[in-house]
Amino acid sequence: MAEAKNVSFDSIMADLEARRFAPVYYLMGDESYYIDKISDYIAEHVLQPEERDFNQTILFGADVTASQVADYARRYPMMAEYQVVIVKEAQNIKNTEALERYFKQPLSSTILVLCHKNGKIDGRKKELVKTIRAAGVLFESNKLKDRELPVFIERYLKAKNVTIDAKSTLIIADSIGADLSRLASELDKVILSLPEENRRVTPQVVEDQIGVSKEFNSFELRDAIVNRNVFKANQIIKYFDDNPKAGSIYAFLPMLFNYFQNLMIAYYSPNRQSQEAVAEWLELRNAWAAKDYMIGMRNYTGTKVMQIIGKIREIDAKSKGLDNPNAPPGELMKELIFYILH
Picture 1 (tube, helix red, strand yellow):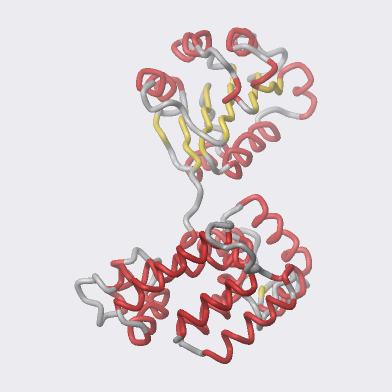
Picture 2 (tube, helix red, strand yellow):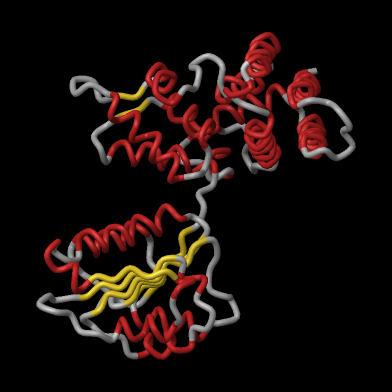
């Protein structure tokens, strides 16, 4: 039996690939991507195809009771080493008492996988958490922060022997965001487009395959604002105003808020003259990632940054209809950019 603990996605996958299985996997959290990857791997690799008809069961939480799931889990495999029971949407099981009893004495020949998406076990149920950990694996799948997306993109591509430059990474991260299922799907599309002799993602590849302009995108807008390039920023805003499908205020506001919020934090760095120290203070993955904050501190005073954060909040409220009877999103974006740059 695998050691009972709350483990990482990578360690779970390493154990699965080595065929070190736990009798219970309780997968919960707001990020469905990792939950699906683990449960799909178990469904596809634990049993041989000819063993699945009698030994693999897929259930849905809304259609079964805890007692029924426990009964399935207590069955023995037929002409196979294991039986696999996967419960999708396990958060819809109303009463879990029968499952809790099963967790205390799980069968070693059953691999029970419960997929609890868009939430987690009630924090008050400490005994249940303890029981699951003792039975097998408890995994919480959390949403990635924006600053973690470049690492995800680079690792995903590296695993498929594809490289990518830093600019392309940020363009993809900013344009697609933290929906990892969609992000992985877009990356797969990019990978399929690459010729065998050149497995590298460039801004041109991103434009061709994902449809994000290599000149007019959120990364370039951020760069123009960081460097207070008024002409370029207004060019990009005009492009988005003329091409609303390419981007909108709803996508740019979180990106701008995140930058200026971090810039405000950078001002409190014990050594804000050092790029390495600022990167460490902001918990960035390397010193290079702090470059824009060093430039930002030269181009914006701390007072101005606080005012910009307030303005972003104001524009965000207006974009949702508060104190805004008729201004369209394009006009709101122009208002914000003008305020930031002047």
